[in-house]
Length: 81
Ligand SMILES: [Zn+2]
Image (cartoon, rainbow, N blue to C red; front, side):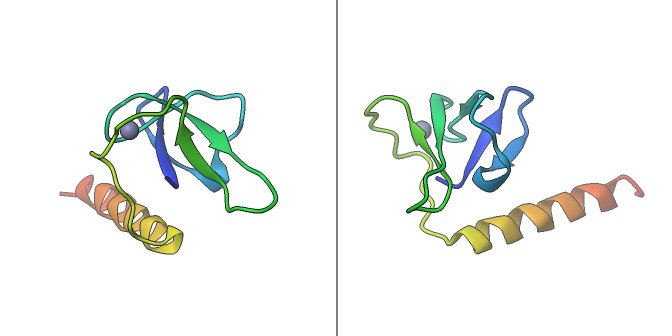
């Protein structure tokens, strides 16, 4: 998965995460770990072999980043109303 939740309940992109922080699956809330090797794009993975099916990402990284940007924009616009 390309997006996880940090200890402050914020959505974090895998390319902006760091290995020292703790992250959680947005679906099942179990702990996930950042994988940032040279072969695959940065991503999060569950620590244990889980049957988590509640959070699937059949969308590309760019699509997910776009959705987060739209959500952030709408959230900032809501402050003015
Ligand atoms: Zn999960």
